[in-house]
Length: 369
Image (cartoon, rainbow, N blue to C red):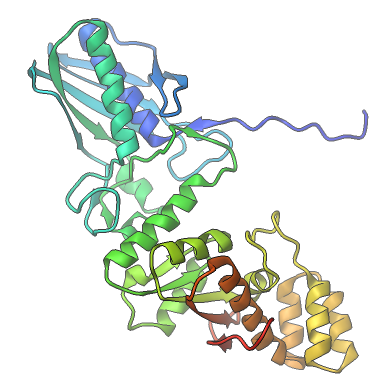
């Protein structure tokens, strides 16, 4: 052994949109080429190609067939990883074109602000393009002038959707068929960022000029109790994407942003971390200890904080001996957010204790923090 850890190359996967395109291509091939294919080659929106295994393929009659594939998210799994994605294709008369609809397990849009209008199936433009080009390529290869009705379905879609934020976005009854490139890059987090963007778009379409940014379900629940007069779309879970979310809030035209988080995330935001995941930014307890020295002359408190294992441990020390530092941290959060937004956004910073109580609430920064 050399003492060095070997690093396995992370495996890329493909999106629900790519899966739907592959299923549609398999179904139309089964009809025109007269036998169900074992795999299909799909053109991605990047111009590259990917071979995808066909899970099931059934010819119902001379003009109708259905096929499914198993979505593989690679080493960046999400709620749809290993989901069965299918397409039922019915050939139409020549000149009828290609019509794409959503069937069982594909959500339907009920709120404005997304890429498709309310009442539409939740199949984004990118996946629609892939589905069309996959089916059209088969028809062209066989010089077949017929059109096709393509119904995308996800057998377990409604169940899977319960583990997503679709309902918050106004997507009801199933999952979304998504994808901007067709491929899922490990650790790219593109899907989460796209969800934040969609949530902010829905909030603006709902007519609110304020967005309440939390980092997860628990902090959101406390924020909703605190701001019970605000409509549901006003609350957006930003996860670890602090900088990107402030950019989005600015770009979508919000005038007010509330950051409502627990102390661990607040500390990272206060230190200007653009991404607040543990793997992306250090907790910075030494920095916090420096703030404590300025707020509380008692040297013991600062020493205890510097020696703490986690921000949570430091929080309970500070709540008892130096609660003033919470307001200071909230002010620094506001300054970081304003720096990322680069605009005249009015920012409010709230830090929750671990029972949902408010231990700091700042609505204006005082000088450079």
